[in-house]
Amino acid sequence: MGMSTPTYLTQTALPLIWPLVAVVGAAVRTRHSTSRQATLETWQRWWAVAALGFGSLWMTIAFLTIPEQMATSIGFAATPFQFEIAFANLGLAVMGFRAAASSATARERITVGLGAGMFLWGALIGHVYQWFAHGDHAPGNTGGVLVCDLLFPAVLIALAWYSQRLATNETATATGPSSNSAQEVGSLRA
Image (cartoon, rainbow, N blue to C red; front, top):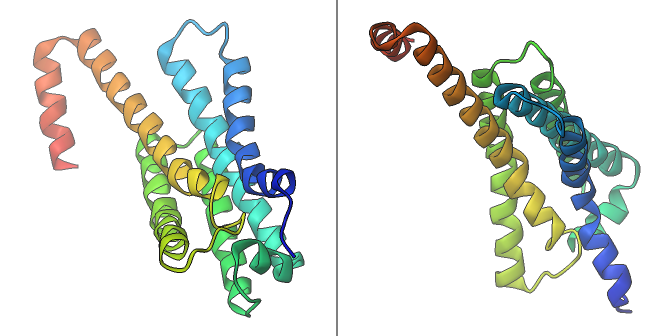
């Protein structure tokens, strides 16, 4: 029996709630911010906690509590492998929560984004392959999950990279050109 279009659209769009929460939260929190660096910090923290952290925790709970429904939503039969997927997502959630900490550095957030990307971008490739090779149009295989698999790590990396560049440029401007050259040499050694 087929799924109605509204039900399909609701199920396929459901994962988008997490990046939406991150964007709305960060936008509201930074609407009066006067510092680009403070704005970037807020956006990184919201993206890390809401999108990567809670998005991955949600997947952990779903794969542990309703594994049959999760398998069906992806277009697969239920297998014990879903238990492992749950804990892979728990690892992503922990990394997301760590990246949201005020003590997290841009370098740490880039590393978290790259680590998350290895799993999520691999999952993205798998979803696209199943879609085109096997016609798997299940709501958990296409739509919102593809957007999340791509953007959760990519946005965190981009925000952290931009924050790091901005901090380096602000330091260079404040200390002058000779200090910047020494700083660049020092960062090459690190």
